[in-house]
Length: 564
Image (cartoon, rainbow, N blue to C red; front, top):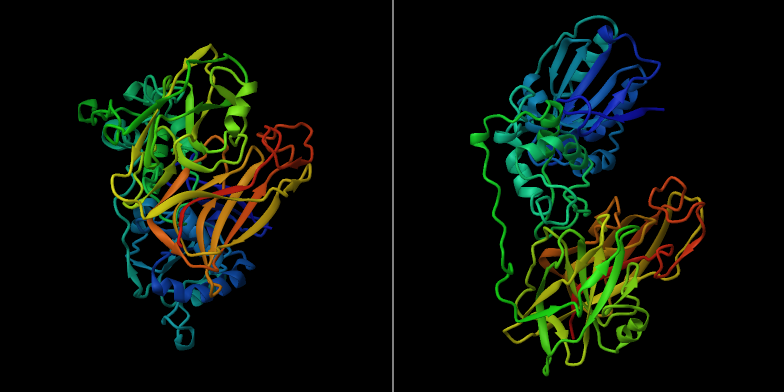
């Protein structure tokens, strides 16, 4: 059994990738035989040699040889590399070699290249063998080198010319001696953190300026390496979405290197200025401005709360909403806002148990909405729907403005506003939010991984614009896959680490036509164990579908146009 542990990329405690902890078969470090395999997820030669490499590693690992794969090229990601290794049955540890520092120091210029060492002694560098195709292999360089190494000898051929794809590693991570705030991390923090982490915003502390960033440097490194910040749950490499909020592997490694070096300032005169944020509405003057009916008072203690405020827009003709934006009345407590359309008056009835023009729920709005206008989150850029599309808002319909509040330890007051932007052109593709749900979920207590699957068949051609997942506190993963009429599968959205606090609407970069008869497969995973820190019940209890905090949901919302 192998033991795998998180390890660094040029630093000791915080980082990326995996490393191998040697088992009882390992010899002493001075004589340990290791193989470093430099690879790329998009190099055709590396792909062709993968089956031979997998077979060879299995054979020699049993003899005590340790293999580690390194991916030095620019643009590689943890997810992409993990998928590559799994799909090709390469069952050994890997690391991202961000900036290619290890590859370059090992004299690697082509991928794939293997480097064999006994302790610190370089025994062989070059290709695994002499051909791209298995049937054409005549000389087994790597196998011969390992045979000699374990016999205590030197291989006859110590270096061979590698063939494949040129190394394209990009800029290296600044070293521990070089890295500093002014030249390396200020720009990363300014561009990705200050939209929320500045005075008066929803984040609990400011990262504006060197002193604030230095104070929180280790926290910045930790949450960025764990992909908890910036808040973007969609797995990289699955779907292409507008305005993605994610850091590159090089940025993550640089932040970690900086924290490990003690967060040095550098020459602060060289630091970029903090960005200026817009004061007005980001999409210009709105066509309609609506507000919560009354100032709302939030208590000082307890869990976050979700309140739904009912607003009746003053319109006499139908309009199509192409975009929405929000200005929180109190930025320190407004976590996010969603907007639902109620054409049947269900929200008015729910108001009877509420106050100040709102009523409380957990998760959904407490009724089946007729449509949804979208969601707002600090840092998420508002986006207009394409021309000829929009969400229909009829006279007499209510807008339910759902606000997720975070508490600050004192009483707070909020009266947030919402801007609506209408289509100026004729709408030929009215859009709707379709709710694909599984209300039959029953999650037994104590189980850390309960999986449910739901498949929906599309009765008509549709154009897909956005996806939004929804679960409660037991949620762990959600995956949405398009199954085409010919049976081929295409992953639309993957969330590997669900977080109830960050429910985002993922807008596609390009609308996707889905043909009639296609299927949408939804897989949701829940954790109802004691080890789930978000579990609202202790001890765990059986959980079913419902609106309460202790209930669960399995919902995928699709923003789409249904073709005639």
